[in-house]
Length: 401
Ligand SMILES: C[S@@+](CC[C@H](N)C(=O)[O-])C[C@H]1O[C@@H](n2cnc3c(N)ncnc32)[C@H](O)[C@@H]1O
Image (cartoon, rainbow, N blue to C red):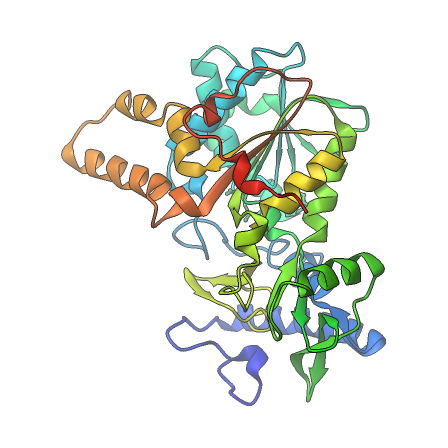
């Protein structure tokens, strides 16, 4: 794998080398992407990211390796601590108690741990939903979610149903998306002296390389051109049209209830800050982060931060109410993190230390507390949401584009 002549198989220093099976898997996925590039000469970066993450049976999320947790590539809040999901459950419970139609729909449920922990908390609060739907694109993760539910909450597993698409009829209830939008394929762009350029992926001597050119569609061109008016030359970043389309699709389907989006990201003006001149794209491989998506194909996660202003704007256009925006720390504390933690059955000092470490990871400014944000979108729901009771920073999203 460490062939410096072929940088697509080059593992940066300090990162563990993949084993033979992983290399073979990566090579098959590379060949598939190269085949598409050979036909089209180049593909938008968003298409490259889509294939790298979701190509059937081969993409990072579609194939069998462990992704989440200590033995995987990255760790998400539900994997750090059940406290996170228990706080989310408090927000779900508050909204479900206002609705006749008591359903939850979780997108991209990862290992299934959040679903299990939310159901257990709602059971304790005597507020279980009629059904807990999961919409998961990865067949492999779907299987893992089923196993997790059987292991952690077997008696509640019959409440969980997996969907292939959004409910055909309208949906009322709570929709959850934790670290979903950052995993959606984003377009990359570059501001050049004379033009707004999209960044594509092509091959050179059998290696993947970037190439910039005319944006592939009018909407993208319009958006990059508008950004180019304020950004300096050679600035590179991303636009996530898939995430915006997802919000619009939710707007088409939600009749009544709440959508809770939790992810790392910024308001528009911070996302496209002049200092962030290489964008927000980041790759995760065995708990190492680096910025090169063209290597370790199918073996690493590729993500971009969320432009929460763009998401709020799409929600507004879809007639969803932007009902709250805050940091993860304020959201969890607003949901009662401290009192939930104080009720944990702590048996010894070691457990107390672990609990404190979990709370610190979830809430501290230098870890997830500030970098992760929570956005609430509602329809036909008037109650003030508990998660935003300590701080509602919607004003930071303005001005919408
Ligand atoms: C970064 S993981 C987060 C997993 C989980 N929510 C957590 O916090 O641990 C992204 C998840 O989103 C799923 N996913 C990506 N795009 C999706 C889509 N369009 N619809 C549903 N799930 C999707 C992936 O398969 C994966 O389960």
